[in-house]
Structures are given as structure tokens and as C-alpha cells.
Length: 69
Image 1 (cartoon, helix red, strand yellow):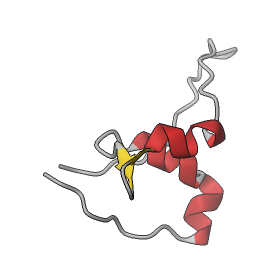
Image 2 (cartoon, rainbow, N blue to C red):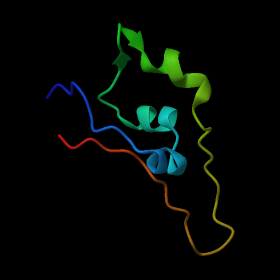
Image 3 (cartoon, one colour):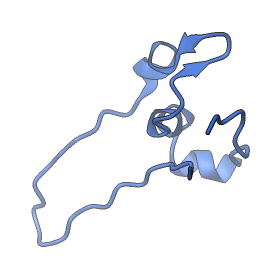
Image 4 (cartoon, rainbow, N blue to C red):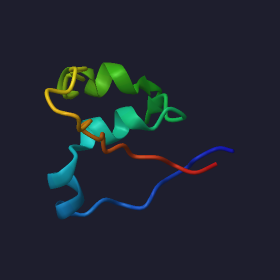
């Protein structure tokens, strides 16, 4: 399936998770117009992923953007 566009995010959506991080989450999205790799365009703006052992019995969930196939 080729994804041509996705529903625009609202201001509130982008306050919860940044645009670069949302773009990184979409694995099928590899390039942006015109043929620029997404990591070249947004890589420096990605939030670093920190894998930490939980200090309590709770594990912190991760919020990710997913485009169904």
C-alpha cells in the first residue's frame, strides 16, 4: 500500500508528540518530497530514545504514531 497523505495533526496533537518524532514513527514513510530521506530532513530534531530500567514496578509506556496497512 502506498501512503500519499495522512490526516493533518492538530496543535494539540503536536503538543503531545512532536512532528519529527511522529514522522520517525511511520516506518513506511522513508522519503519526503522531493526525494529527501526523512532522517536527513528531521533526524537532528528527533527526541533521543532512552531505554531505562524502571525504578518502580511500573514500565513507562511509549506513545507512537501508527499508520494501519
